[in-house]
Image (cartoon, rainbow, N blue to C red; front, side, top):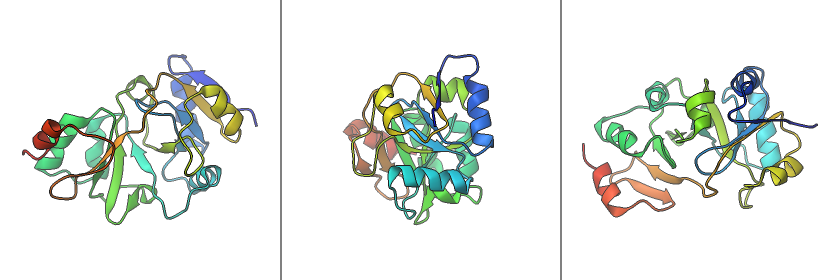
Length: 199
């Protein structure tokens, strides 16, 4: 299989992404951190395909990627503290864990928590029209691939690759369901953590 490769700014990218998500295809997209591989979060065939490509256990959830912070309330419960955190962190290089709502895709929920990202990236602002599940582009336990040529060579069984600028470092992960908020990965400045606890 030779994947279709389109730049974020290509005029056909939005339609190609929309079709891929509608028809259960697998895609690789840029974020404000690293490239992500994923697809329609309700499509079991796509979920299984990405797990196989990543050598990822079915027990591991994926992260729900959204194009705007306004969409978060559809899939997660937001109290005053969580709403404050969303306003401070997103769009941005953070993954937040929240209590899921009934509409949350089961593939993104584990132990009563959903992981959500709203990247600060042109792909999510200008291209993405639907929810997307995604995880970093790498085999399980290996570093993320940041070079498009390496991605094309390694992940040949994807349908669409969207290219764009990335930073190359994974997002920080914050558990907003705990008190105080727990940082599970990455660094969050102390002054920002203090502001996150305010309501």
